[in-house]
Amino acid sequence: MNKEKGSVLTTLLAFVAISGLVSLNAGTTNMVAAQEEADFKIKDFGVKDGNLWLSVEGKAGGSTPENASQIYAYAFVTDNGTYAVASHGVEDSTEVENDTKWHSHGVTLDEKNCVSEINEDGTAEVTDMIKVTNVTATKVDKAMTAQLGINNADASVCVEKVFDSSP
Image (tube, rainbow, N blue to C red; front, side, top):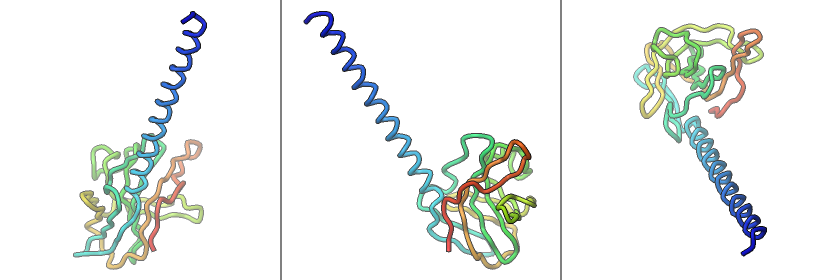
């Protein structure tokens, strides 16, 4: 084989190998996205023994945000306010020592779906389901899973994407 044909063959093989790696990476990214989606796909929710609970198709609490300006949340709209079990990079809770760990907040959203009030009401439990304990709610009207973002310009925290909502 002459040098020119060898160079073309080497280039072709390199292209095939790189294309395979790109496809493998895209496949892995799609698998991660599918798993993350399942981690926020609501199966059921309610109140049991005075505790708010929510189950998902994937792993409850299995996905956490990848950067400090993102917040992932499981939210309960109840007869006694809205409670969220959240994971994020900004330290604001005394419930956990690292706020990337799931913890609870009582929250109020404004007309733009931005957080207007936040407190540390409730206690989060994340096992095979999401729970909020130590609250006085007796009815869940709606459950949601969402990604919120922190605006660096004004420090506002707003809903960017609702993964799922029921009913």
